[in-house]
Image (tube, rainbow, N blue to C red; front, side, top):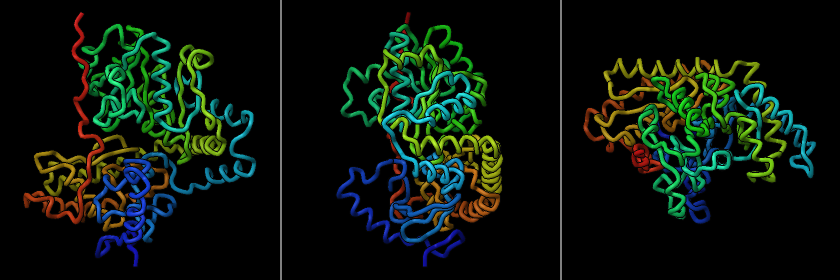
Length: 445
């Protein structure tokens, strides 16, 4: 009998998942379309590999096991699975058509709605993936400034200009690799040391889990203004979650360009580039960024209803409240157990659990916690991505699950051999180098 959401005696049976995985490896490179959804991000041999359906905050795998989901499709499901208002809009639009030979009114309606919510969204352009619009923003910044170099901080997609700074850059020309460098978040000196007259853009995730300190975002805004550099906020995770207007609204800092995806359409594929009209107007004749499916109407219908629901139900405030309960509850339990080496950090809408290396290999500790949560019917990949469908009962149950499984992690740490407690291969890193890499050599005048 499949496991449910409860304190099950054993781990979920994943026979059907494993059969599908064997077939996938013969046809699909890496076996997955999205690395964060693949088996390397879960304890292999224990975690489900394929999900069949979802409703609200719960999902069911292909073997029938039920889980509370805290990954929520790696970001898009801000309202929840099968959210009726959004799905009804999709069904209605499906009856009228998906794509057309001319433009559709939804293109205008959704652009006006985005401009109402997002600061500085004087112009709007649609695409399908986050990498599309971050790359378009970089091209625009280079065209506007006449410069080539980009400084970045965070994850910005798979295109050449960004992936050049990672250890998965094979196939990217060396000349392209010399045009992008990274800086450390909250380290303003590292930004200043990399700046010169060649820098076209500074692009960053305005916040992940560490809050901005010492007016970091405001100082970036100031130096970009002073030096004629285009400031770009990659708001894939923060947009419509931290606030309706994202990080720009939450922190009171306006970027020149901002990019959005994930939460804007509750699971439908839509990405958005917004920004100043004097920069965006280059898309009219000078910079080419057009796509056949940019005006696809099912996604636009979903975006319209998602944004209206976020506003009417005050969803960002709900996410902050529920996520803070989860974060603070986890930290209280860890403190009671004397587990000073783990904590939950981040803003309520998206928090993550971290482990200090002094307690052992952080990936093994994460894997063990994930493994034990799976037995409780909780699908967790290291963070809590809250949706409007996560109820008080979900949060209460999850905290009780932490109260039951954290002592197992503590026991493993105390034993000095965390690996012995794992029933499968632990989680693997996506990139082998994730900090202090590809820093530009100090620029001297």
